[in-house]
Image (cartoon, rainbow, N blue to C red; front, side, top):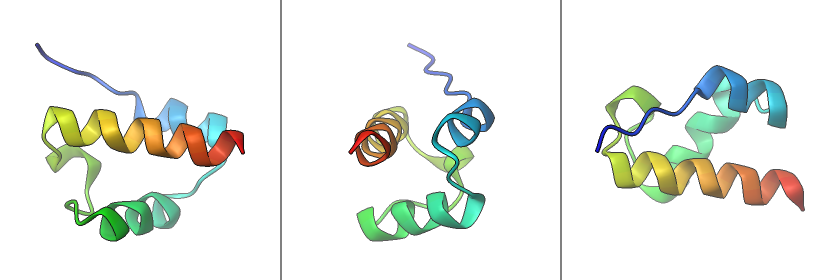
Length: 55
């Protein structure tokens, strides 16, 4: 399964900047560049960003 996450659309929706997303990656121990994430990491990070944004 090829998981494709539109990071630009996610940044537009949540209004998180690149540095915010890099901070989330660092906090979770993921690579700081979303393009280098494993599919399960990308999905987890996307869900984490959406959950934090919705609160």
